[in-house]
Length: 288
Ligand code: G4P
Image 1 (cartoon, helix red, strand yellow):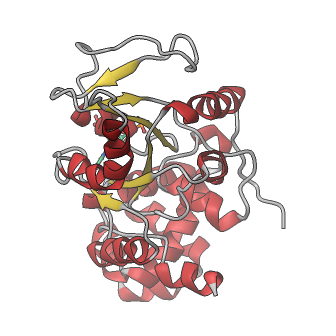
Image 2 (spheres, protein in one colour):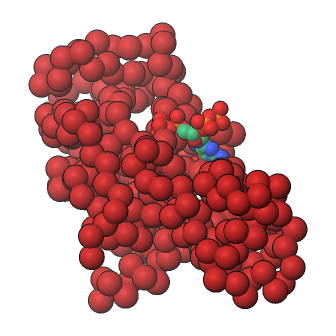
């Protein structure tokens, strides 16, 4: 079935090309994932381009995600031999672990260089992630953007700036937020839109609000009832009627586009409750 949300402007195609050009000069890729959609925010282009290059998944917005499901995801990555950490980038929670996690991953490579008589050098990383995932927030925690740009490097696209961590152990290259040319299905597109990775003009707010209501009706009916002062009977309505009921309850008469935007904002800003849209069990059943 056709997917009615797609967003892949030219600047993303360019950013992917730059990522491809830079991959050979870095030791490790930091792929920033949204803890609410760790699987759906994984960019297939990044996987294709980075191949066997060591990879650290940094799950941001841990504070907005369902803690049990975050643990499931961390376990899933661990079981698949894939280093991953979850952070609340706004409060720095978990960020200091980044260096601790990557040192053992790269220890052999750095030791081989020392054995050849090469000087100890900073670890070089490139960071990549979908728009709005929290990439800048994470980077600002890891590096000192203003003071320590280290200039261009051979083999790296001109004009791109390396940033250095305060202790000098890490050099990081940033990439603008990127998606990929075609979303595989509507569910994936809805998840990216609801969590804020897709530009607002690329989707219709009522579609995404309906998707959110369907999810929360299953996952946490109480949180919708409390937030929008609904009776239990409202949960028996069709999703469209539920949206209309909420529209009226929050004083927007029948302006369901405005109430849809409000619902989306409420979901994103944790006014309902922390949630995770991707389930490990779904991915595991596809892996089989
Ligand atoms: P980007 O570079 O990937 O585009 O994302 P950016 O860091 O700009 O973050 C996008 C939004 O997500 C920001 O909110 C940021 O504060 C928020 N954010 C990033 N990491 C976390 C996190 O771990 N937890 C939470 N709760 N939020 C996070 P904003 O609304 O655009 O700005 P503001 O609220 O910070 O003013």
